[in-house]
Image: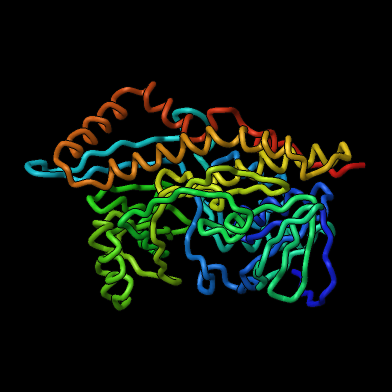
Length: 421
């Protein structure tokens, strides 16, 4: 990681604002191809322990296409030790009224191929691996603990003013700075957003029983409660709760919080204890009116944000990375302008349908699943029964959840990034 502090103008081919997992991945892809790239990262250098000390205590269920992209970027090797196969996705609808038992359906990856749906990896491990990869790429300048202070348009692109006193310019500027993207606002791209009255509580647990590589999502009226397998006898929790109650839960002592967790888990994993930190993330959705403007593009949660359901968030963002990186690498290898307006318009068109369809589905699923209506509860039961008893429908749902409706970007198929000769 680079720590520079001078008044000189930095000049790059691409400058990326935002060092989240998508921004890091894009920098790794471009740097691997030899594209001179600046990454402005608000986060500090990584702590030693990715579990105990990490600021982000979430995990991500990466589908195989996303893992292929990380392999292409040279960043998957550092994740393998911490990656846990996701073989079965279990959906549970709790009993209501006279029902004695919950209804459930298993989506088993072995029904459609020989490999798991994907692998669950702690976000802190992903960040550490991506940062380590950037350190090895001469084409990438990675500025940590650095913030965008201003972004101004000029004839050549955008001039970026940084919190360390430096300024930077590039052929193309990319906003990867999250839902409340300062870069998106600076270039005047509008967006629409809507909050949900929910907060996702996240934590890690250790347990005495094996999770058997089964991810279990239980639907409660306030939102889903999801157990996601980690290495050994550990699991990640994503507990979606009404925001007012979530704040109370996060304020509990460790003993009282663990007791509440045990009530949710219902003995599935034996004895349970917390490790690492607890986190709370308010849930909202957002969609930008455009994913580009003159010499500027948006990726990931600066362009779109979904509720945390069906493991779509980062996988969707990494498809942005794959499509844009592929276009930029091809443009670079031909010696063309990386800020070309036609290229950016093609990127926007390539991503719009996938993003909007996934956002609509995630929004609908969240509202459908997070509801105490007796009618909707019955509909959920009937739906689970139909999926459980009709294999073609079950197989179709599994395959559609792992692919894009417009096809798979080549960087997600196992293609190797080659530097221009």
